[in-house]
Image: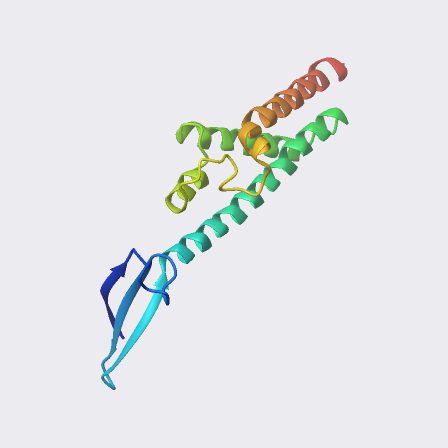
Length: 158
């Protein structure tokens, strides 16, 4: 089936049967020579894409919460094993990614294509205050865990 764009409707005030920005496609079915019209809502597609990004971003955020709090727990309980070093490596890797993207998560940059929102939590399922201060809060927790870990390794294990 071949499709070509017929028209782009941006002003729907005169068209009560259209909702939001829509593209009208004409699809030609060559075997039976029938014309098929299909409406695709750009706005709905953008909302769907943003929702997917928000779910993925929230899942990654939860994963890194587990990683950071495992580091803190392991440091406090002096459970220094291979997992604490793997977790530290993951957090450092995340830090490198943030440095490469000028302190923005790549998912936030991607989500900007689908939203004009200026809210800190437009791309993740978090309260706005937490999304706004996320980096500083978790950096403090991570550095605290590293200080406790250093204490456990160099002072407490003597």
